[in-house]
Amino acid sequence: EAQVTQNPRYLITVTGKKLTVTCSQNMNHEYMSWYRQDPGLGLRQIYYSMNVEVTDKGDVPEGYKVSRKEKRNFPLILESPSPNQTSLYFCASSFSPSDRNEQYFGPGTRLTVT
Amino acid sequence: RKEVEQDPGPFNVPEGATVAFNCTYSNSASQSFFWYRQDCRKEPKLLMSVYSSGNEDGRFTAQLNRASQYISLLIRDSKLSDSATYLCVVNTNNAGNMLTFGGGTRLMVKP
Image (cartoon, rainbow over all chains, first blue to last red; front, side, top):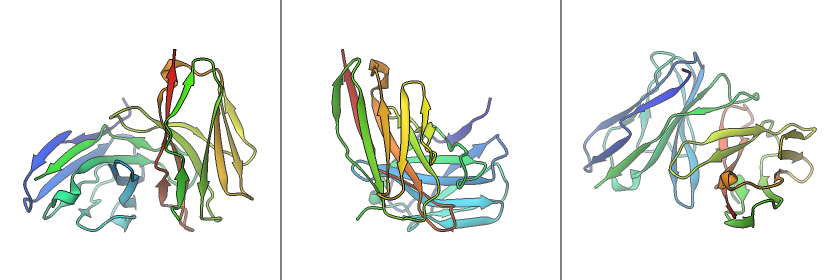
């Protein structure tokens, strides 16, 4: 089954404790991205990757890191999480963002930082 | 001004009604436009792409107006199952590789 998986789905952590949210897709997509969704602000892009070893900042990259060592995986790293990073996070992938290919989203990771 | 703007709603309509949403975007160089649907606490899913000539998929019709920089979504004969948040999505950088989502318009269809 074609899908994007994220782990964990729910995470409660404390300020400053490094964490990684994994994202994996099995569709051989080149483009992957991370979004956060907050009430009243909608979905905002954190980072995106056009292909292996190619990553770029989105709208809200501060406090996040990503890597793309393999085509299928695109982990999101919070080196020192803070309460303002409490949010719902989505990973997405597609063949390309600039033509009409659908973005497939993972199920989301609900992160709470206390 | 936000790059992609939508009326957050909610739009409360009875079953069978026709409802239309608009979305405005600020980057005139944008080339790709989409409508996504998001159910509560779930991931967004593509509803339809928006083509320059407009396109229709069953009860759903999408239109693009480049001159006024807006896209629209029309839903005819609303069903209870259409209740969701509808997200307007636009590629907003000149390289075409960054997508910006509107805040979403919430639709509630009542019996």
